[in-house]
Length: 330
Image 1: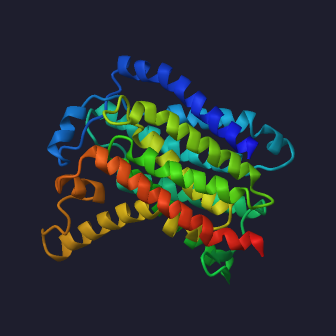
Image 2: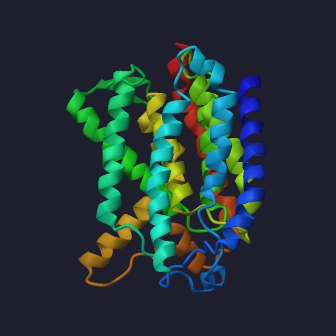
Image 3: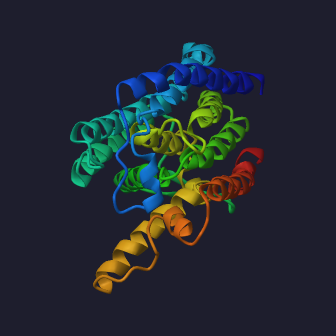
């Protein structure tokens, strides 16, 4: 418990220091976010807010992993470095996307096909790595009922790649309001840290999870409404990669159904909107997708959305913890 608390505090402090340095620099570099023209009209006042702020919490987490987590690495426990390396590669994809948007001075970076191919390749490589190092089995754990379903290696690989790419993009969709993605992900990270304390081999994952939670709290000092900086795709793809990686390193990907409930609802709202639009030749199911924009247009303020969505995330984090707790008590 003390190690996890140290990781949380280290992640928080390093992120705050990085933010105090990076935000003014990004502002001087005119690394301003281009706001999507088809979004809520009042979002246009955010035009020019510095983006790529995700580098601050990536730095904070890395500092925690290479200081607090180093004794674990020296003992051969790489469960802190696997999620970090995986998420950093996704952050690199996001950085390229953010850079292209800044270069073109519009909210268009990499194409959807380019992002999908890159994300899929990274997902497959990660699953193979974790599988080969013995940190993952093809036995699919079912939360709540505490059962396992054995899958063949090829089927599990396809399943895992789909879950990872879907989760990463779901988190990316959630990053549409000040502080929303960070606020929703923090309880998820705390839950993973709590679960890791039940395991015999997940202490590294616990350190990473705690550092992630602390870093996101630190980032919220700069990202809470009105945001001084946005995380950009650099940050949101890193968060998505972190959440997905932790689920697989702890060998419980299906926990993302409840633990990532907000991410799931955001992604489903986007899918429903697109499918309904095509089936009805132009009609919309929601006023705007994803879900947080629909609620905005229904009158919800950014403050309300920030407090309600993370509260729901926290409630389901508690549910998710008890859904897998018996796995380690038997």
